[in-house]
Amino acid sequence: MKAAVHARYGPPEVVQILEVPTPQPAAGEVRVQVHATTVTRTDCGMRGPHPWFVRLGAGLLRPRNTILGMDFAGVVHAVGPGVTDWQVGERVFGLSPEVYGAHAEFLCVSAAGPMARLPAGAAFHECVVGEGAWYADTYLQKLRLGPGRRLLVYGAAGAIGTAAVLLAKATGASVTAVVATPHMDMARSLGADRVVDYTAEDFTAIGETFDAVLDAVGKTSYFRCRRLLKPGGTFAATDLGPGWQNVWLSLGSALVRSERVIFPLPQVVRARAVLERLRGLMEAHAYRAVVDRRYPLAAIVDAYRYVETGQKTGVVVVDVVAG
Ligand SMILES: NC(=O)c1ccc[n+]([C@@H]2O[C@H](COP(=O)([O-])OP(=O)(O)OC[C@H]3O[C@@H](n4cnc5c(N)ncnc54)[C@H](OP(=O)(O)O)[C@@H]3O)[C@@H](O)[C@H]2O)c1
Image (cartoon, rainbow, N blue to C red; front, top):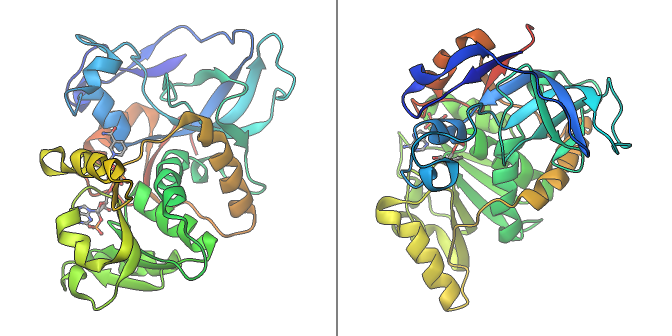
């Protein structure tokens, strides 16, 4: 099969399309023929690697998993011994957060892992939004959102930000989205109650306070946002912050049994439930993918270069099967 392989760490150009053996499903696994996948900030981080400590888990000198790609949508192609809950030919979407491998024509995943049936009527490329939703869910579930609760999402145009707006609106919470001018209409179309253009005004001086502020893109800080928080409000971070401040502030908050700053990590055990919820929301037309650019697998290096600008909107799709 064809796969995008990076045998060493480095810039996008280390990724090459090569012929590699097609994986065989072991007991309890299914093989998926991948139709669509994404290039994400995670893939860029794993390939770089950055931050430097990615090497501790991904391989000190060279990458252990040479095929990246976490999000996939495709068709069940074969099932391993003991698999009864998936049938060959079923249309599925899922995540491979531990071994990656979706930048390829085929990938084997655990039958019990994060995978769900494709929403009725959805195209493959519309369903590779699992990673952003899984990350967003990680923060939102800690924020106890629901009717009457107010959330501000800073950086609402990225993969995590768009998912956060959509998932928060689905709880009935009020959502203010902070984006640059070109993304204001897109943020409104996701259902944001108020959209603030951070290039035109100081988003911390809009005269409102919130139960929670989510920095969905790692470009602001607790110290900048604290005046937006109601007493008892929470600042949720998706990135380390300057000098790793989000790590220290969240540890400090936890020490005094406060949730003033949180920096939760996504849990694989929750991912399947997130995908099932996405399927339900998509079928109810309450969730839609925000797809920026689409690239064929052969042009995945260009996809990496674009994602690394930090300016993509929603997800960048790689079509493994044309169209
Ligand atoms: N290292 C990892 O493994 C890893 C994995 C996943 C996520 N993360 C972190 O999670 C965060 C979000 O990831 P993502 O994939 O959702 O991001 P993303 O999709 O790359 O975010 C891109 C969006 O960020 C917005 N943006 C850029 N600069 C901004 C600024 N100064 N202020 C506000 N918005 C800005 C842009 O919209 P506008 O034009 O509207 O500004 C752009 O559409 C990042 O911090 C990323 O590093 C890290």
